[in-house]
Image 1 (cartoon, rainbow, N blue to C red):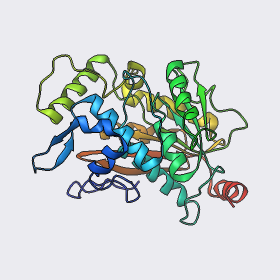
Image 2 (cartoon, rainbow, N blue to C red; image 1 turned 180 degrees about the vertical axis):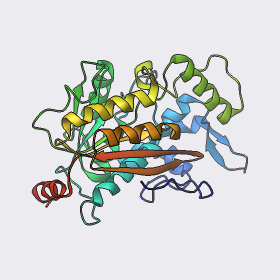
Image 3 (tube, rainbow, N blue to C red; image 1 turned 180 degrees about the horizontal axis):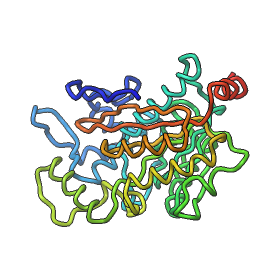
Image 4 (cartoon, helix red, strand yellow; image 1 turned 30 degrees about the vertical axis):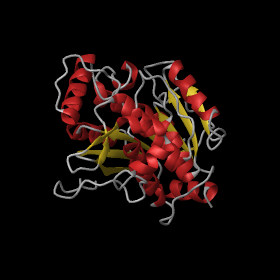
Amino acid sequence: MSSEKNKHDKLRLHSRNKNREKYDISALTNSNPDLKNYIIPNKWGGESVDFSNPLAVKILNKALLNYYYGIKNWEFPDENLCPAIPGRADYIHHIADLLSENNFGRIPIGNKITCLDVGLGASCIYPIIGVTEYKWKFIGSDIDPKSIASAQNIIDSNSAINDKIECRLQKNSKNVFQGIISKEDEIELIICNPPFHASIEDAQKGSRRKIKNLSGKKEKHPELNFAGISNEIICEGGEYQFIQNMIKESKKFSKNCYWFSTLVSKQSNLKGIYKSLENIEAKQTRRIPMATGNKSSRIVAWTFLSKEEQKEWRETKWE
């Protein structure tokens, strides 16, 4: 296993992340004039966005997607998860690097690469970034028909992505891959940002902490706009159980996918995750450290393919 980055290192985004440096407020407000209403002075006398306001964060993200990724239409219900674009982009860049390790250091690009996003969400954010950065094809799965409909509307409204992403509804909420991956599917990458909380109480505690950190205010009943609706952020057993279910089910599709992966927010969950990956006899496992601002996280990836099978896959599909 690769080790976590030293805590003394500066927490930085991936080197290819378009938002590695501070935001260009002038360019972003030109891209989305509505953002001007949510610009506030920072403690150094410059300009910043009011990150404690969920609407401000959503408008900022619209500006980022427009300015950096060419996405003109990004509309979805305010009740749904509003993702932080830089952090989502980091996952895509790191998983692209993982694929490059199996391709002589070159990132495979184009529609020969298929990626499955488990938990597509109403915002369709991971496929948007993967398509615009690497021209990959995407499958997006979700258990919520409304989220699928919202994501499809975004896809249909943007010519840059409208023939690159397929939405698939997961009809059984207890399944992860069953009912989504067909026998014929060949998928290079599976990504997942699993529901983090085990209950609504945990979710509210998390929102209270976030609001206090951003604004210094204490809220007894915080809005969950930062976190999303219940099925986006809450599942029985929280993040740990979701990933355990994912690992168990991945064995059934061991030859359909090159790399399975998931975000793991809680470091304390890693020991049990590694034990489960050992039990199902994954051929390789990888841990990829990630950091956004003051928050550290990691990607855990695994494959069932032998070195010979990986070579055959690459030579058949990528070359």
